[in-house]
Picture 1 (cartoon, chains in turn yellow, brown, cyan, purple):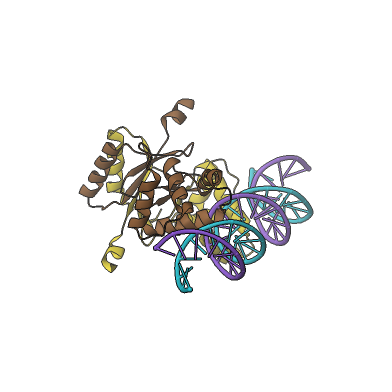
Picture 2 (cartoon, helix red, strand yellow):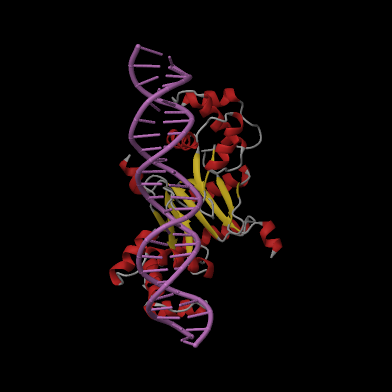
Length: 141
Length: 141
DNA sequence: GTTGCTGCAAATAATTTGCACTCTC
DNA sequence: GAGAGTGCAAATTATTTGCAGCAAC
């Protein structure tokens, strides 16, 4: 979820819409996952700690796991086996570089095209990860 | 790598071709990854332990990591974040059920078709994982 | 024979849990 | 005010590493 960053109010609304209780910690954690690009749990923790130094890592883990169950975030694993998170949950395509491990969202138009293609051949994809060697890594070789 | 199970000799040849030293442990571990369907490390350990009870889990991890570097196996992560392995390393498509977590190789013909499609639109995929809700899970709902 | 491989046990990293206290609704 | 949410510390799980003996080339 890059582009327009959601405001605290939007996040509050999002949590409410899923029947979750509103706390400052939860809003901050949602904000962190939205602001950072496919962060790992500790990235989220560090982001949140700056604004709320008393927060515990356990709260971050518990909240992330709550968000997963509520369908607010999706979890994915990069090629170094770190668990990463993203706020978007509609089906879309992630691209991962097998060399540097970077992950990014595929641009929406192509993403939809690929998902449509997969549907057409009989799969019913809720997501898709494409493994590539990214341009940067290809050039460095 | 299902279908025809490779013999110990084939595995020996495979290891040699990558310049790896041949040991009984390595052959067994390769055999296990080949025989089991996307096993996790402990599955491999259990399989191997039956035929060689003295083997240590550390050897399994070390050998797996060696195989990865040698490009003999690929590692992937299921939707419960367990690390799984497969002997095939040529580009192919894995399908993962987001509900039950099962992973399977897509049938070769469709797999090639999808990879060709991705190439055509400018990606250069070395692999692809499609997330779905499998038929079994869909029916149970 | 030499160098790399293995088994064991201990170290590290990532994530989860129990409990007492605090806050949202 | 009740019950869920949080912080802290301890527990658990997955994986890696040091070291001494053993095996492959």
